[in-house]
Image 1: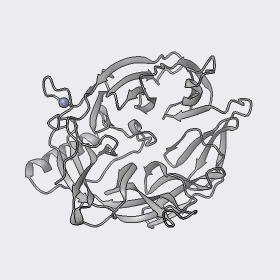
Image 2: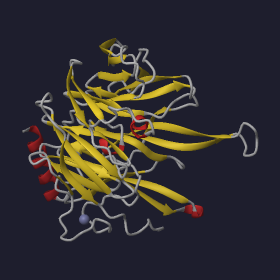
Image 3: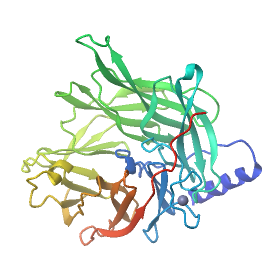
Image 4: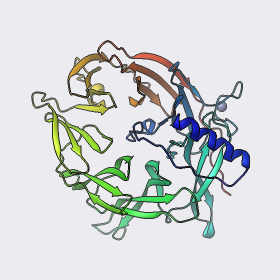
Length: 408
Ligand SMILES: [Zn+2]
């Protein structure tokens, strides 16, 4: 009900014709896993939204069938006039978020600026759940050379996002010359013109930040520290009230083969060791499942809200000597008990696959190829996980964009 009221209020604001107003959010943070591209989806009462490289896919929660969010008859979704196309850059991070009943995303625009340099600016945009009334909420830029990268989340009136810049260390031709990716964590208010506020910057020992998540008055993400061969995962917590960023004081095991934030908890798995839950407020760590009997180091886990799905990592499924059970997935309940074993689809024409979200009733599994413009969506009944099967619900084809981005 709360969401419906927010939706009505948002509708009234549109009719009044005012500048965008930002209502307070009721974001519960349960849906966005924010680890792979299609996992950066969002959920409303009626459906689920994903950014498929600039095209919005929508799944109706009743029928569990998915479509391209476009009502133009005969549209192949390749042109700028396709209603579902919200970005022109395959591979840009549009970061679809639900906030107070509307769907928000980041629109990237490249243009030729001063000194004939390519410049990038961003717009935070939003639309009604049916894809109509697309409008700009605010514009922003990041320091030159820095692009929005990875995940974003809208929480309590702010957008939190990561930026990435490739920085040269040393002089070209010198023996110690190399390139380093610098990651930055920003926040910016949804209204007003304030510049993004820098909250964190990586150094040479930091890993790529992952798994951004907001809960109550904190925003969490995972990164790593150390060298490429000897690193340890680190959880960061940004305290909204105190405006401080700190490391959660706990030692995480390496490697992390799947992780997720759920409320104030961080769940992760280490193959051949166990599944752990970390309390991000106290740093306390608890082993939920002992996996030391499982010496197989090629497995990974996806933590959904009511089930956990363990399967072989991609390399183990595709290599020449494929394990006999390489296509199987082991379904656990959140107590860590094995409740079902299912067979996952595998086809070489799809370049990526995995669990991409969950409602209170079902989980969604996808096989996709962004370059070929195709995706298959399956659902799995999580209310009866012991008897459930993976069911193919939709097969979608999207023509690649007609035009490349134009200079201004
Ligand atoms: Zn279309």
